[in-house]
Length: 73
Ligand code: SF4
Ligand code: SF4
Image (cartoon, rainbow, N blue to C red; front, top):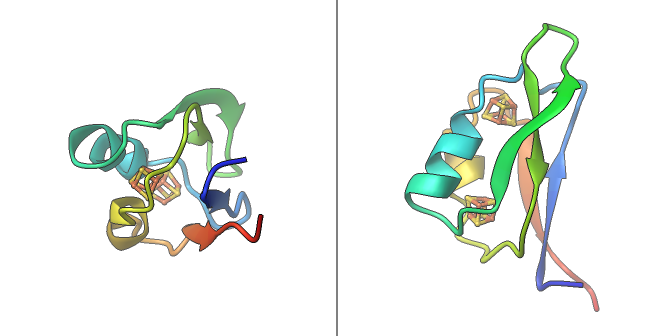
């Protein structure tokens, strides 16, 4: 397991994919669009690599739906 865990709250996420955009632009490039849909019909992001803990995704999410936790192990 990596040093950071990315947690996406599927009840809060509307699927705007701003987090995916910024992760690929400024972060570790480890977020991508998934096939799953949110309640509002957007695309749920998914984690496809090891998070570097930059927290750009947290800062850009308008809905406080994504958070980065330091892994305990
Ligand atoms: S920025 Fe927030 S609301 Fe938009 S897709 Fe990412 S987690 Fe969901
Ligand atoms: S903390 Fe950085 S590397 Fe990790 S998911 Fe968010 S933007 Fe991507």
